[in-house]
Image (cartoon, rainbow, N blue to C red; front, side):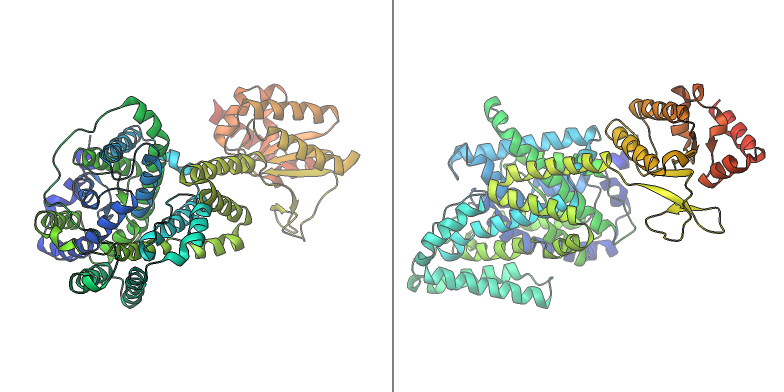
Length: 575
């Protein structure tokens, strides 16, 4: 066992030097400055006291720095997971209560355990069933839901919190006129300041700027500003070690939301990690190691009062852009959070919640991916409708059901595409030995007595009837003139027992009709399956050719010299 693969920190730590530290120091401080106000804001989304957002920035980051295969991904509290936590836990306990907090921490342990087990057993491939259109639709919908939920803090109105967009919009329309003027002004100014500095340079700590602005406004002008909600007391000190309270009934009820967090958290991490990997050549992201790292981050984080965490799109990008080269940047961010927890939490007493809402709204609305929707509309209309269906179902039915719809539709489309692959007749390119798709090359020669049939997929139980029906339809169009069928099998990479039996049945059928059946370009493993299944009991080895043109030429001229040589070769290969 390569210990460096199991504990990736050992790949870079022994060779760590001052040149690496300079970039990591700047990146760690930059991300830490952004992480602290974001952590406080995201805890509010999750329905937890602000301090728990900072707890999420401690142990999970340390564990990921040790076990994560990416050296630049920034782990911690994120808006999407926070809303999913709120959605799931709010059905079991009152937001902010001791019971609510304990359930959120138990949820982190449950999520981490599932992720860790999936990583150990190399089950990262399961997430591949969430296609990119599904991810885009789901992420965009959740971003919109999070943003709309924050209007209650931005405008100072106690709007209903929900993961169903029509419920939120209905309440906003009914209560919009009750907005708090001072709260709204501070919030809108904060939004404008964040957008302004983001356009100048994304490295500017815009979140910290508006936090300082909000604190100063409330500290010195708070007496003349009415009814602006502030964070108030955030307890100082580091989280103590404690084992989450286990309740089997709660675990059963939390399992669906935990599985959602597992899928979403892993998708976020692997997609961010892969995008950062492409910008350097020092390391490679290993999907199953990422699952292990995330699992340990959440499991150990739950022992120190953290709710479920994953990677942040914005902080990871800033981490990389600021010069981070290793996981040391994450450890520096942790040090900043520790200093804040020990000495600086009183400074956040006057922080307006509307400023936190502004930070969240600008951050999450940037996740609504209009460019991807436009691209899919032009490139693949079926993927566009898949994205739209996931987007709308998440908005209407909620986060948990939205991802179920997305996965379900992905599987349906996968089954549809594999059961109805592309099939076509090939024609001979004039003055050449090549056969090409007659629907794409108008100049090809189509012979009345020859059908060269191409099937572009594996041949198995789900599409064997589709193969047979299309073959028979094309053969029927040829009529009584048809004397030869050539199956161009270059695109068939696998065949199961159902597919083999269907092929044997069709060979017998056309043999009775006086039509010869040849195979061309059959891959070795597929040919082995055909031979083991008794195909040579129906036809002999001379019916297998390297190329379609050789099969047609053999039928026309009876030139056996080349074919006997090829037949001898494949016979020896099979033996």
